[in-house]
Image (cartoon, rainbow, N blue to C red; front, side, top):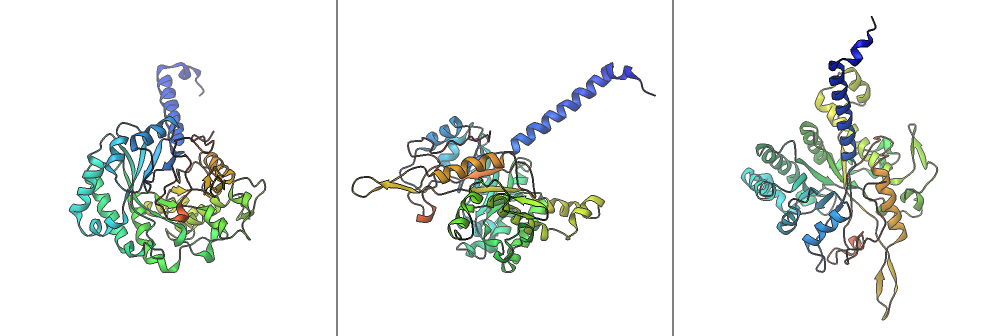
Length: 380
């Protein structure tokens, strides 16, 4: 029987208030998931000081940072800043951390516990280590090192605050399956490496960290890839894959990664199995492993000669278009396969004059700390 008095009762008011509070928390959580950070590299001898850089992050509204190694000067500058941090474990440390549990505990104590006012969000155990790139000599140490760091984090009571993973690049994706995205799979010769990583991420419910560079795909395939498809400016779909429309290369590359993860995280009929509850909770998590893009960028091109033939680096219109449109995209749209915000880190804060030549000229700020592009880090 309908009873309208219940809607004016104190009990209903409390229930309504609780419900609205839950909705607000859910909304805030969604907003928080749309993190856009910037990689802070230190391979330069002319860079602003860490204190200046942290102040620049705050003044520009950049809420997250990635660093490749636990630089004490940077960690000290980050104290109390509220900036979320992706903290890297150098590849050269992996063997020691993989073979010695006390070393992993000491690493966490020295670089995380000793900085309680620094918001470490992720620990990336290694950077772009795979069996098929120049870092291959470290490949056998990745999962044991991740395991030891994860256990050290857990023993320190930080399991709910600090996530542990590794950063991979797209060299692990089989080029023969890179198109369309639904065909994406890992190379056969890296499966011995990828299967334990996927198992670790699945069992511990950690994200996978990935570097995605449409820029490099474009410059090596200009005869096949058109610039609007790279810069998020294409107005019509480039192609349709199983009913999903793809307008940009970033989405296609990331969904190829997701397809590879899905193919190696459970049975092919995973969506139906998830619905009828016939798949274990660990495999359900594996099917929905979250990707965090810990690096993506677009190279600025050198400007015209100025005096004595020297070239001055100016903001590239294409680079700015990429960064500006990317931020709008990842903070709202997401990919066709996985709609919704994508946590993403732009490469890089500054040009670093000690980087290899092909990794230079990506800075989104000049050495004078002035922005090169009109990037709104909230995506609006």
